[in-house]
Length: 488
Image 1: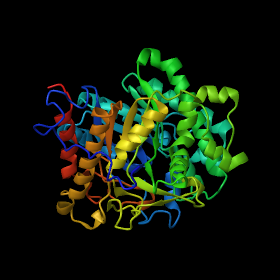
Image 2: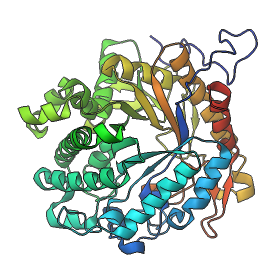
Image 3: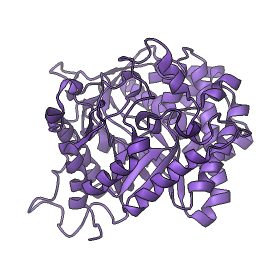
């Protein structure tokens, strides 16, 4: 076993070099492979009341002093609501074939509930967005829930803390989306990163709604899993026969590499995977919570009824994978949200850290971990994988001028490593990966980091809203055009 990636097969370079083990005539990716950029409604749309949109939990959270590092808000981000046609035209020019976006629940049903009125202006916005994508040859890839809950549902019954209320309201919202958009949207995600909804929103309190608790995250996670399961069943029963789409969930989870070859560190790495990935993936793909979580949490971890686990198990038609980095994992620690392990980037021999540091303290550039993660996910869950997020925030990029920021060399380096590792996983390891979405299309509102952390492949001047593609925005589509059998 390797602890620093040095003995792992080196990723192949971009493209196919003469004399390499890859034949020029054998592309890495099939013609229907989806590649493009990902976004989320709360992070890019702005226009918080346009068309009757109601407040979300993130609108409320941003109003609380000290929650967002620079005092910015979802109310003013990148103005995608008004500039979506310009943004889609730019995607077409860059050469991507798909766009992952999310619906805003409170833009479609301002108060959120099953008995509350629908906003036809909200419906029109997303109809126009989807139609613009299709007219530009771009496949829409839609997420139902990317963290922005209608604030009214928090007020009424505590949002995700009330399983009996939130699941029917989410099903009503999902049905609305399937019925109004499913004739054109054929790729659905129910939830984006429920770990963050549960832990960051209800455990640590760093995200909306800002709760700090050692019991709420497990309740919230359980509610989300059930809402996903019932929504997926509804889609497959009522809509899939005619619409012929696919539905799944996307989970965050980075590769956890044991710090050493000791049994303790090897077990710790699995415990980290169990709570970061298995908490949601194991019930959905294997039909049970991870045993390590059951042992650690006891009665705090809710139990599925026989009917519920039948709904949940097998409810995702693919594995949606959001991943950014790799950590070394040591045995020991008291953070239940990390499996009671210790995460580090420092190499065991003390010679330095695993990779270049980004603007985010949790993110370093460690490309070899991606190939290991994709192998782990397919070996464990035996289901096709859609990569739905993968991205990089350059250290202090916000301090650069727009002219300086567009030459984003370290982001290009990051994506070169990640995409080469992806190619090796597909070509050498035969892992069935069907999409890749870079995070993100635009510099945007990065949650608690506000407008300070820039993940965009397109620079945004937040005063004028001018968009300028960075070098990475050209590099990513070129990789797939060079490595896929694409229609001419």
